Image 1 (cartoon, rainbow, N blue to C red):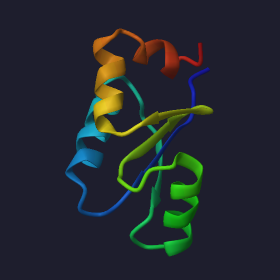
Image 2 (cartoon, rainbow, N blue to C red):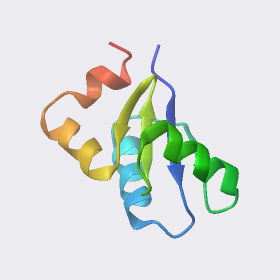
Image 3 (cartoon, rainbow, N blue to C red):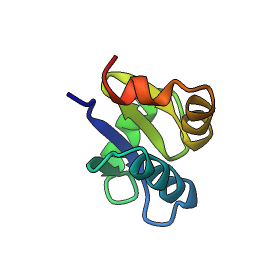
Image 4 (cartoon, one colour):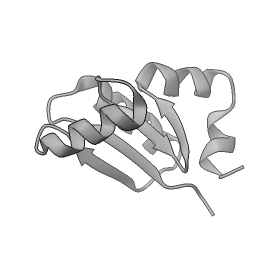
Length: 87
């Protein structure tokens, strides 16, 4: 069983595209995207939930990973696979 991946994003975010590409390369086939540029309530909810204003904000299961740099750091540290597997 793999963990659900949720990504807060906007239409024109290059870091969102890079994060999505990295996740797809890791075998993630489904990412639930929440577009904060289309719904101000989602933007507010993201900021309250994460304490951050920038996108992407990525959740793997219940874990708030952060943005693309945080996701990349997890991958470099060899910890992303375990998180994706729900370990």
